[in-house]
Structures are given as C-alpha cells and as structure tokens.
Length: 89
Length: 114
Length: 253
Image (cartoon, rainbow over all chains, first blue to last red; front, side):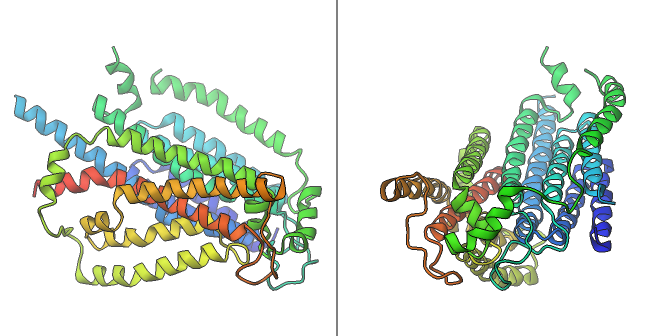
C-alpha cells in the first residue's frame, strides 16, 4: 500500500462522510461530484484506468445533471402548488 | 495497513446507511444511497489488486508482465454506469411522489395516505 | 415509523453492522495478495486468444459478453421506467406547443463566452466519444464510458442556453430509436455468434492483428452497440427531466 494510495483513500473517506453530513441536497450534489473525482483518482492508483474513466464521466456529467434537473422540478412543483393555493383562497 | 481499503469500505457503507436512515428529504436519501454503492466498488477493486502489478492493458507493455485482476474491474465498470440510471429512476419516483403528496419528507408521505 | 424511532433502531444496529462487516472482511486475503485463478489465467491468455490489448474490454464484450447483455438490459429497463414515470406528468401539452412559437430561448446566465465555449466543446466531445468507442479493444475505453461522453456533446447545447435547439438536434423519437437500436444490435450480434460459431455471443469474426483498429473480431461491433444504447439512454433521461421545467418555465416569462 503506497503513500499515494493511502492519501487518496483518506480523501475518499473524508469526502464520503462529508456527503452524508451536508444538509442541503443542492450542496450535496457538489460534494458528490468531488467525491466522484476522488473515487476516480483512487481507482486510477489501484491500476484500473477503465473504471476511473467511467467514474469520471458519470459523476461529473451524468449524475449532477439528473439531480439538478430533479431538484429544479421539485422546487417548481412546490411553487406551482403554492400559487394554486393562493389562487383558490 | 493491508486492511485499510476494506475498513474504509465498511465505514462508507455504514455512514451511507446512516444517511439513508436519518434523512428528512427523499432526494438526500437517494444521494446517500450512492455512497453505499461506492463502498462495494472499493471492496471489489481492493480484492483484485496485486502488489507492484500494472493495469491490464497490454498495448505497450510485454504480455507476460504482472497484471492486476481484470474480472473485478469489469464488474465495477458496468456497475458505475448502471448506477447512474438507477438513481435517475429513483429520482423520477421522488418527483412523482412530490407531485402527488406535495412533500419530499418521508414522514409526510405516510401521514397523507390516511 | 418516525425519524426518532429510526435513529434509535440504527443506534443499536449500526455499530453491530460495522463490527460484522469488519469481521467478515478480515477473512479476505490481505490487500495486494491476489490468489484468484480465473483472473490470472485471463491476463495471460487473452491477448493471444482474442487479440485484444485491453483485457478489461476483452472480458466485457467477448469472454463475459453475456453478463454485459444483462447489464445493458438493466440500463434499458431503468430508462424505460424513467420515461414512463415522467411522461405521465406531461399534462401541459398545449403549453409546449405555445412555447415552440418563441424562436430562441435564452437562459438568464448564458453569456457569450459560455456559448462560445459550448460551441468549442461540442465537436471535441463527439470526436472523443467516437474515439473511445472505436478503440475499446485497444486502449481504456469501450461502449459504456464512450456513451456518456457522446451524450455530453448535445448537452453542451443546453449549457449554451439553447434548449429548443437541443430538442431539434435530439428529438425524442430519435433518442428512443438510437437506444433501442443499440440494445437490439447487441442481441443480434450474439445471434450471429449462434449461427456462425455454434454458441450465442461467441466471437465469430476474424480476429485480425492485435493493435489495429479492425481487430478482436466482434468486440468493436459490440462496443458500438453499447455506445449507441448508453448515449440514447442518458440523453433520454436528461431530456425527460429537463423537459417540463425548462419549457413550461420559459412560458411564464
């Protein structure tokens, strides 16, 4: 276990714990992107470049777009529901 | 020191599970689930590693050099892309639940059923 | 059950789970001390038997192609689920028609530099994606990673603030066609293995010289099929999520 591997492993554990402790889903998405990048770095130093490539593209591009679009849709549904309630009062 | 990746994976698994159990927002539940999934990737890749071995790509190194196990890498590789679409499915469910019940709090979903 | 009860239950179960996990993982061989027979055998014989220099792709699309078939259809099923769930919400069809009369939509934050950067990114991403698909058997790459990179190309149009242009470049029927074509192509290539070599998904094309683009038999074809499917799947998921809130929200401006 080289020093580099140990350092990146510590980074991964810290980022993973940070995701759980952040309260807001929007900020969690950003921490998730950072966690994905740290995980890709870990896969790279574990001699798995295919897996690192896959992790980078998914957690930097694939997931944040989906999560942000879902959050936007939820906040918009809330706004529409509130305006409906105000209109019916 | 040789147990460190497995210990890290076990920690990520339990802390992710704690996030799933304790969250008050369904979107947070889904995101914490992805932390649990990365714990499994860590275990799989940790099992397949060999000391002083290179990546299993022989385009520029001699074919009889010491290489890492490729089978576990195949499992993790496809799993990462599939995970993204399964999280998309879960988030679509969350959006639908919010549309019907007006809330993303798991406790509220139960109350409104009555 | 309420949050407090859940947390109380986890306070007992969590540390127990952690202890059991650590105890169980202790039984594994030490990190770096790999003893598995199958992996080492594949490492040694795969470049000679299948002429693919990327052993991971060789496993993915040839030696263990059946597992990839299953994974591919998990992807297909989840994307169908997303489409099913989110199209049901689309009851504002007339609003979408009205918004199509607005020629160009601009997001408030899309400055000129962002649009220029997106314009530069699109050909880069598409060519990188095509490179990764075709070189799956030679270097790190293959259908799964390349599919996401290819899907990110049209997404750059969204970054430039032109969502309707994205809808014109990648309309829904085209994305569905691409997704299904990829899934069907993979299955049919396997059928070719059944017809010409007697075993489903067995490599039946000439193997060529390793290191060349047209080598390793049916691996590039499988890679292209999976790349098409993943591209279609991701673009479909993104547009399903983005559709209603972008188009309907712009209407209210």
